Image (cartoon, rainbow, N blue to C red; front, top):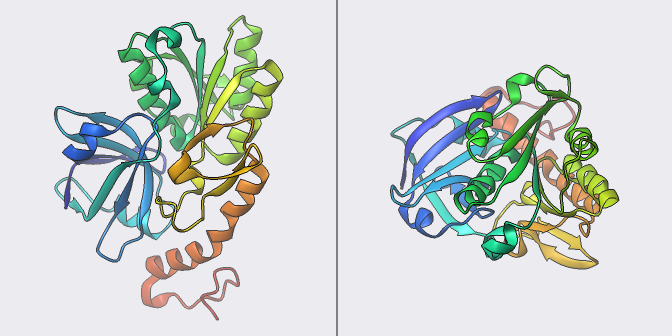
Length: 294
């Protein structure tokens, strides 16, 4: 059992949680993830690590309740316990395996969307601790959904953009990236983490400018151990699994259309399970979408 030290709503539908997990904190690196399970019969949830404190043995997570398991997780409070907390899993960011002197020569930009801002913070903080400067673009639909801005500003140069222009710059992250380049910013390495469609179009943008781009395929992970096959994707014409070979890959080699198609295959069953959990005995289907009426 793993004790929850803090749990709170972060921004909009997003939640932040600090968990006591000393063995994970002792070995994890930016880019890796953990598997969380709530209850003995709970589903395995892969969540990318937001931050860690090796001395205190603490792992920080940021997530958005979507299905049954993440909704149950959001109902836990300080002092409660998580049944299982396994990690660190996956491969760490390539940045952590690059000589520091080489990193200092690079012009690095992070593009973060939604919950993807959390794992971006972990990498930007690691670079800052090693004396490497970076720029971070944080994208959100509205001002209320911008997260981790204050923390991010302590470790990087931050540019916030909102789709509706309610805060920071106006427009999507790709527009902000192109605006920065037009203003004279030069980048040779980009790390993009966020919704699948955002990562796809960021890669299309960076390809035009010859910027090497890494993306995180965490959104398609389910089991987290390579056994279920849900996170199978094609990278450079070869089969890879996000949970064991990634979650980060060369974004210019990822077949995003195939990955997004696979992502939709699990929505119906998850929707059925979520409604049954939320509505309990009152759930009898009838919507024609979740299958609960069959």
